[in-house]
Length: 106
Image: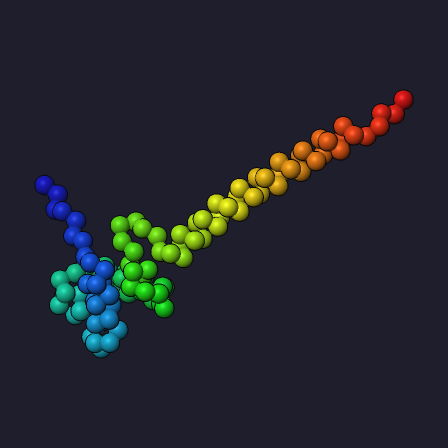
């Protein structure tokens, strides 16, 4: 039977990264002390470094949630795509009506 996947709280991850950066210990030693895999701890460290300056909530949003910045980027990209579609439609409509308003040549 398959083992249940372990989950860790945001606070645990933040503390683990803090121990790694401030403790002066090697990553393997910290991982062993905390009972987590070395690669897991390394992933948390990279994630925290990549989102430096953000709150703990935004560094480790959890369960597929996006950070506030990622959510804003997603929303803006969606708005941009809608605006592009509207511009393309308006260009076609303007070309159609411009063609209709030209006088016919005999």
